[in-house]
Image (tube, rainbow, N blue to C red; front, side, top):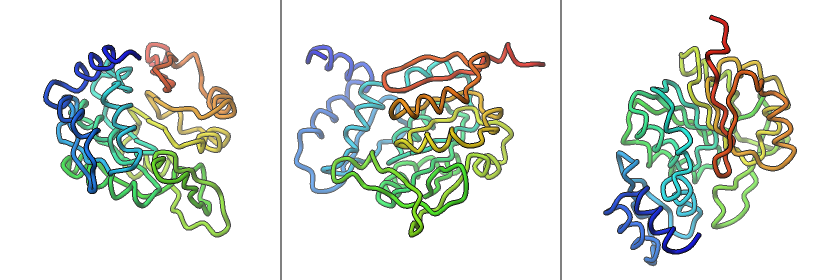
Length: 249
């Protein structure tokens, strides 16, 4: 992207003052978390210095990664699986005024940042420090290193101590009958998720997922009923919007 195109995109998506603050903050030498804002956010979010947080902010707010959901009408329950530091959760809570969100993130450091970033939204959001997994199993975390905090992976391990939660568990916790939007960005764990029982898909209205590799794509599309979803791509995201007119009344 040319510099002029970047400035136009960032200015348009962030708004005038948030754009100026963002340009200043990304150049400053930070020793403590700093605030970032956007016209698409009700409250500012915090970013950790020397971390991947700035890169995540670029994706979600500067380049408006979730613009593909702009036509989503009044979603109720949103599950944010792989919530990282809460930018996507804050985006959903800001853009969809009547929604509630359950945000799930296994990494302790990311989870504490998530807690801080979504706390202003009060009872509309529930946060869980856990790994989304198709079954109860011992899980451990794999950390890619400093500056790549968005890439934390999970794997089965006999010595793992990470709490796991299933999508049916989350639906029961919510007290809702359906998931309006299922957002999944779990760094490859979607392979295990979709290779297992996915009966819960019948309770999902819309999906936005980042698929990590060909095996993940194969596992996902093997379980998606293409007759029930309109499927599209938006940058790195695969978007599945349910075709309700095809559902039996």
